[in-house]
Image (cartoon, rainbow, N blue to C red; front, side, top):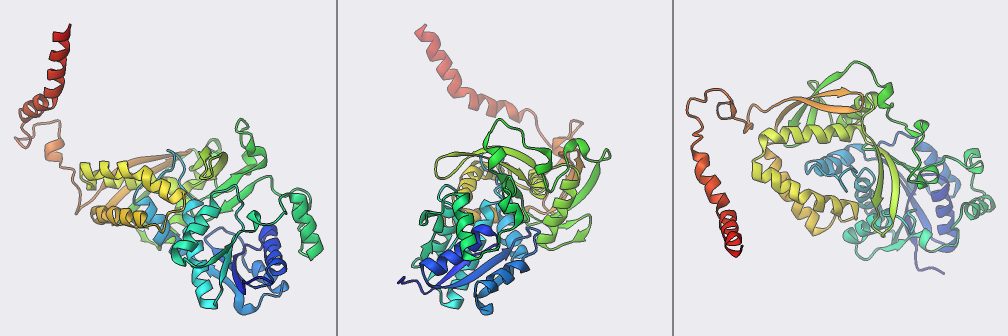
Length: 409
C-alpha cells in the first residue's frame, strides 16, 4: 500500500496522461486530482473534464484553469524584457510555460491537501527538470511521481495495450500511428519533435506547420503595425490597448499571416543529448525585434551592453528550469529596473518572413539627441577635437607593447 493519499496530475486528457491517471490509481491506489492548464494552446479543454469523470475523478478534484493572461503578463513579458534567446535562436516557448504549470499544481496541492504531484514528462527530456525544480522550490517536501521513470510502459505498443486493458478510449489516429510529431503549444509558440524530424538532415514537410504560411505564400504587400511600449511591455497595437495575452495573440495572427517565426533547430538538452525541433513563434519574433528597437533609443549604452552580457545566462536559467531560483529572481529585479525608461512606440513592417523596424520614438525617455548625432553643422554641440585625447589614451597600452616588441627585434 502506497503512502501517497492524493496526487495532483498535470492532465491534458490525451492518451499518455490518461494512461498515467489510471496507472496512478492502480499503482499508488491514491485519490487523483487532475489539473489542465489553458495557456492558449487553441484546443478544446472540456473533453479533459469528461475523461476525468469517466475515471472516477470527483468533480471538485477536476481543475481546468484559464492561465493565458498570467502566462503572458508574468512569464512571457518578463522574459522578453531581457531579449531572451537560447543558443542564439530559440525563444523558449516550452521552457517558459513549465514554471507556471508547476506553480499552479502546487497551489492546487495545497488547496486540496494533496501530498504528491505527477507529470507526464519522459526521462529523456528537459521538462522533467523544469517541473520538478519548480515543485521543490515552491513546496520542498512534496513527493514527485514521474511515471516514465518508474513504469515499464516504455514503448507505444505497451502504452496502447495498457490503455486497451484499462478501458481507456483510443482514438483512431492513435491506432493508425497518430500525428508524426510530438507537439507542444501555448500562446508563445508551437513545437514539433520526433519521427520524421529525428533525422536532422531531413527538411520539415510544409504541411507540418500550423500557425504560419510559408514566406513564399505570404502576401505580396507589406503590412505596417505600430507597437506602444510601457516599461518594456507592449500595451497597445495600432493605437488599441490590449491585455497582455491579447497582445501576443494578435501578434501571432499578424506574424503567421506573413510567414514570420519559423525555426528549425538542433538544441542541447539539459540531460546532455542533442535534439532537433521545429518551432513557430510568430508573435514572439515580432516582440523581440520591437523590444530591441525601443531599447535602442531609451537605454544607456552600458546598461544595454550589460543586459546583452547577462542575457545568455538568463536564457540558460529558464531553459534549465531555474525560474524560481534566487539568481533568476535577482537578475529579474535588475532587468525590470532597466525597463522603467523603456517607453515609446515602434513601427514594424511585416513582409514575407521578415520583421523590419522602420521607426521608433519616445517622447519622454529618448536618449537620441539629433543636435549631437547630426552629420550637418551641430553648432558646437559636439567638439570633435575631444576625440583626440581619448583615442591617444586608449591606444597607450598598445603603443607601449608595440615599442617593446620592436626592441626585441
